[in-house]
Amino acid sequence: MLKTLMVALAGLGLSAAVSAQELVEGQHYTLLESPVATQVDDDQIEVTEAFWFGCPHCYRLQTSVNEWYETLDDDVSIVKMPATMGGDWNTHATAFYAAQSLGIEEELHQDFFDAIHQDGRSLTEADDIVDFFSDYGVSEEEAQKALTAFSVRSEVNKANSRMRDMRLMGVPALIVDGRYVVSPQSAGSLENMPQIADALIDKVRSERAQ
Image (cartoon, rainbow, N blue to C red; front, side):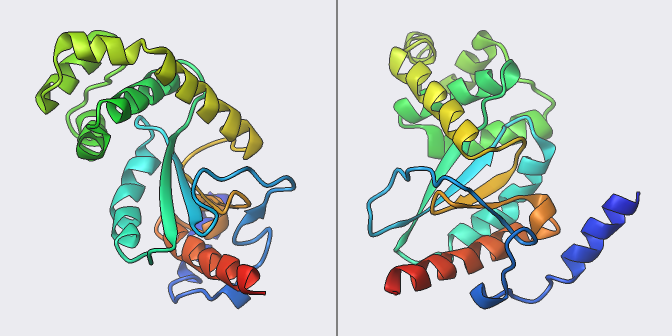
């Protein structure tokens, strides 16, 4: 209870916008000892959203983080990375990358979350995922082929490797420029995560300018 209260109070303390100059390492974010290679062009600032479709906190974050994405400047690129911790996590990561390979991921993303957290569907069986994909014009054969494709398995393995490199022990998390990790605990609340990440983007811009 005390820990929960401390997190809540920390969240209240961040009600106003946080500037890059006010950020405190170890308090607002974690700095990775070894930066993780980014996946975007060198002139872009990468923000990686680490999530699991089955995570209720990741689901709650979607509204605030999606609204924040709409405000970002053109020099910021978003990379969504499904967490891979075995079992259902990997099944959902496979579904994510299969949908991406089929060109339906952006359209499907929020619906997949809603199906799990509003409709009570686990979507952890291949047949259920194939059926879900059919709502987006994907045939059963196409869906099954995508879910078992070597390229999709490779993407899941890459995500698993990046998670280890980022030292992620849970989700949701926002990783800025492959170096700065923002969690609900460091931000004080789920809702504060975007504003901390936003200040870190400004920090990266300042660092690059120097």
